[in-house]
Length: 478
Ligand code: FA5
Ligand code: MG
Image (cartoon, rainbow, N blue to C red; front, side):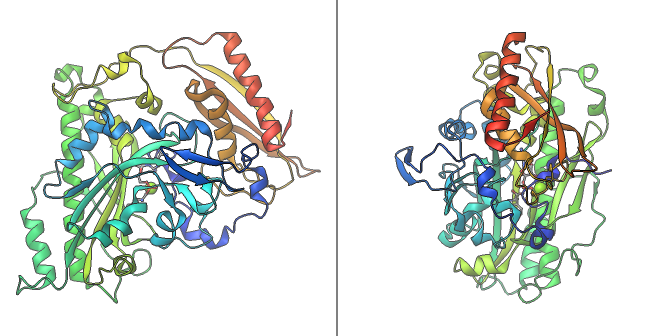
């Protein structure tokens, strides 16, 4: 079975069916944007006009200055540096501002106009034309246009309205990587494919078995850009891409295992050989495309997406003679594996008991949990407004005409409880046989990473959560 820690809710999960998933008219009404009054706002000295598309809460804006990927000794920053060390000669961009245009985040990457990733239920908007970037790919086009180096890495904070659980947070970090070759490179008399194979041969080798059962090119599901690339060129670029990324993941797992003090200290799964597999994927800006998954505690965990850059993107960036690969890796995912960090909220902790455990100077050490406070589960059941809606269970579906979307529930939970909410999940849903009304039940786990919550506190939080569901989503509590 393919489980990806609810990662199937990613920006691209619904991409193939995007056309069928027309954005529901009237969606605006259900999203939290009232109360903003379309004020002008200033973020780190930059002025922005807001409009009726503004849906970014202050709590999200306040995380912009944190820049965890640049904090010395922070595990996200250490993970970034470890990956960077595998790409010698690449240019690094680590301080690109997170507020970008819709053109940068979506249009420049061939997202169709009706792609669900653009919806206000999935993406934080400042105004109709301006978003908090949802991925580091937002900077691909500009970086290709600048053409400073044939290889670059971009590490940055990215923002998505998403599930609430131990592996999802509305702010996380990605590293984008790209490497291109120039078809008109005058230095060589051999074919471009032969040049790329020579570059593959210069990469470090490894002896790990990596499962990769699908052909590099599949005319139906993972096509060659046949007007621009030969199959030989793509085979060579795919080999270069996959070997480069396998080397990164292998070195990270090797480091993670070395971090346990002695073999008897190792958790049982660490005594098993590392297992990785390539799976066919889809992105609107690469073809063919793949994802790399790692077997971690009996679960296939998706760590990155990648592929052969669409020619249209390089061409639009004034680089029509270039071709190459790109990838995007989730730094939290890698850091959680690397340091055995059990909950994604910990990365945002300012608790010295967390931060003092990581250092660029000393040996890499596993995270030692400093506390485990009791869970506090509370349920809320309600009737959704309107008759037809999708709760967006595992598939993270886009809402029907009722305009209800699960991400709105998630955001209200974060708004009310901040980092005191560990997990929100749908535990029951049914439709009334006569009225067609839909009832949902969500179970919330309130648990602080730092202290034990009192009953009074968790009751108050839950009551506020229930009231906000009514006020903002118009649901009827049961
Ligand atoms: C992307 O964001 C693409 N931009 C990646 C890409 C770049 C493809 C260049 C091709 C070329 P995706 O949505 O799958 O794809 O996210 C990439 C990685 O980010 C995932 O594999 C995962 O490691 C991480 N990630 C995604 N969503 C979350 C989340 N909510 N929390 C933590 N990590 C996440
Ligand atoms: Mg993905």
